[in-house]
Image (tube, rainbow, N blue to C red; front, side, top):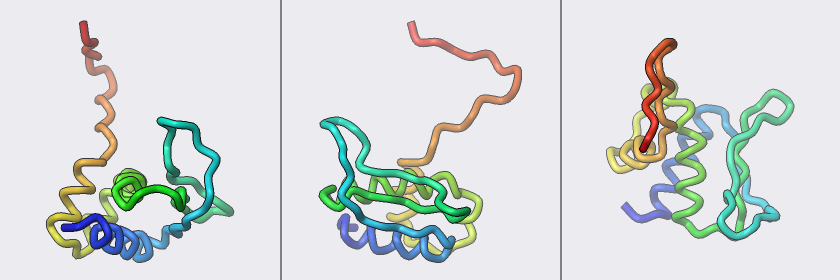
Length: 104
């Protein structure tokens, strides 16, 4: 599925979850984020740099929506959209008391 189509599905999912998505000029340095999730006056909002490419927009929105996995599970979404959401989902938190493995 093309990035523009993925973006439309992700925007629709955000709307169903009452998460506002907006595109604004963000002051970003090279290599920094192109936006993200925040809460404004009690409402979740995803702000995305309007200069971002379609792929960057998909990544930013999918990463933000990944935090709402239980609610997303209830929505009817095409398989490619679910794959993108899984790919950008936050890493699971370790169980309390679990040993932390460090890379050597």
